[in-house]
Image (tube, rainbow over all chains, first blue to last red; front, side, top):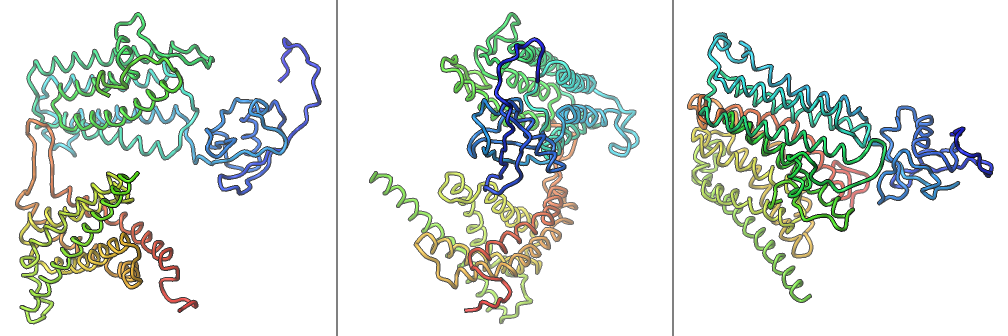
Length: 316
Length: 232
C-alpha cells in the first residue's frame, strides 16, 4: 500500500510471482500468481480462496517447510525469502468458528445450564420441590457460579487479547459438552431438594477463598494484558505488579490457572458437592498441561527466566 | 550398551512368557469347559453349570489382563494405552461387574456364547503375540486371528449385551451399588443407569472396531476377505 507519508523509493518494477501450493504429501493444490514480493501471507490465502471456493483464509494454514510452524498472516513473502516458483505447504484446518462465538457459547452456556436447575423445575425434581426450603449456601453458590461466568464473559469482551481469529469447529462441540455437561451436573445436585448443606463455617471459608481466587484471577488477566501494549509484538516475562494478587508470579508462570484451581476448590468446599470436586480435578488436569507448555515456552524464549513452577507453587 | 541389550532381551522374554502364560490360562478355561460338557454328555444346551466350572481360571486370566494396560503405559508394547484400558475395563466389568455381582446371570445361556467368543479369541490372540515376539507367526495363526473375528466379534458383543440385559433387572430391584441422595457428598450413583449407558456405547463402538479389523486383515493377509481372482 502506498502511504503519502512514506518517501517514494526508487523501486524495481513489482513483478508478480508464482507460488506453488501443495499438500504435505506433495500433491498440487493450486498456484497463486497474483502476488508480489511485498504481498502478505494473508493475500496468498485470499488468492487460494478465490480458486478454491469455500476455503476462507482462517481455515488455511501455510508452511514454508513441512516441519515448520504455520506462517502468520501478516508477514510479507519477501521477508520469508519466498520468490517466484517457491512452494508453500497447505493444510485445511477444517471448518472454523469465530472466537467470540466460541467463548460466548462456552461461557454463557454454563450460566444457563446451572441456573436452569435453580428454580427446581418440576419435571426434574418433582412437583413439591420448588416450594421446599433452600439452604443459604444454595443461593450463595448460584451467585458465585453466575459471577464467575459473567466475569469470564466480560473478560472475553474487554480484557483478553487473542492471538488467533478462529478455532476449529470441532473444538466448539468438545468444549461445550465439557462446560455445559459439568454445569448441568453440578447445578442438578446443588439445587436438589435433598441437597445437604455443610456447616456455616465451611461455607464462609469456601466463599472467602472463592472471592479471593476470583480477584486473583482477574488481577492476573489484567496484568497479562498490560504486559504487552496493543499492536506491539514485544514479549516479556511477567513479574509481580503493584497489585498484591500478582505476587504469585514469583512462584509460578501461570498464576491465572492457579487462582482458577483455587476458585473451584473453594466452590467445592463451600458446597461439599462431589461433582464440583470432579470439575476442579478435570480443570486442574487440563490447566496443568497448558501451564507446563507455557512454562516451557517461557524458558525456551528467555534464557534467564526466573526459577518458578508452572501452576502449583513448589510442586509443578 | 551391553546393559541395554540385556534389558531389551529381558523385556522381550518377559512378554513372551506373559503371552504364553495367558494363552495357557485361556486354554485351561477351554479345558474346564470341555470337561464340563463331557459331564453333560456333550449336550451344549445345558449351559447352566458352565460358569461354575470355569469361574476361577476365568477370573484369574481376565484380571491378569490389566498387566497389558501397564505394558502399554510403560511402552513395552506399542498398543495405545486408552484403547487397551477400554478393552480390559469392559471385560472386567463383565466378569466382575455382571457375573460375580449378579449370580442370576451365571446360569444364563448368554454366558456360554460370550465365553466361547472370548476363549477362542484370546487363545489365538496370545498365541499370535507370543509367536510374533519370538520371530514369526505361523500362517495358520495369522489367518485364524484375522478371519475368525468376523464371527467371534459379533458373537462376543451379543453375548456381552445379553449378559448385561440379564443383569439389569436384578440390579434395579436390589438397588445394587446404588448410592442415592441425600448423602454428605451431594452426589448420587446408579449402577443400573451406568450399566445401561455402557451397553448403549456398544452401538457406536462396534462398527469402527469391526471395520478396523477388516482393514487390518486386508493389510496383513493381503487379499480380499471374501474370495478373489488371485487365489494361491
